[in-house]
Amino acid sequence: MSLSREAYQALQSVVGKENISEDPAICEADMKGGSGEFIFDTKAVRPACVALPGSTEEVMDVVKIANRYRLPYIPVSTYYIGLCAPNLPDTILLDLKRMDRLEIDARNMYAICEPGVCFSQLQAEAFKRGLQTMTPGCGSQASVVANTAVHGMGPFGYRLGFVYRRILGTEWVLPNGEMLGLGSLATSQRDYFWGEGPGPDL
Image 1: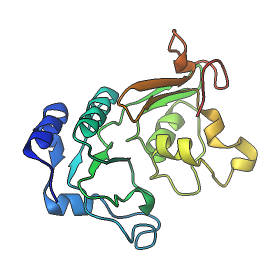
Image 2: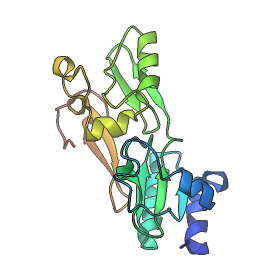
Image 3: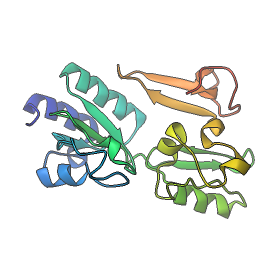
């Protein structure tokens, strides 16, 4: 199966010609790997294309295009587990690896991470500032955002607490393509100041 030219060109206009591909080899390579390979992904089908958005705004636009053309989509980052594999035809695989912005506020001891940032990158930058974070049990190659939002367990969780409880704010793209601010980002200030403060959490 393949996308219509109209749908593909609409996606291309958002992420750029160099950040989308329907090459079967690229699509096949981007849908496999990680824990549970050949277990959780036994019904996987090759995506129709792989798109690499570079910002939250581009993700929002891609989701809106997917809705317009009634196309399924799956966001992935460092792809640790095979549950991410698509199982419907004409799926758009949203590979978020280009979204790799990392900022650390050393004074207030928090980091702003996009989905393409893995724990080894965060830990290395934290060490430079005399700080540290917990690397989860799945390993340092896992996406900080994906692991923190979904699971966040690690060998020192009993001492440092579960990682998902440390989320201060999140920009969450909804299925309709709109963005929802969670935690501290739900307020008008849009500042990372309070983990369990006003506004909805995950």
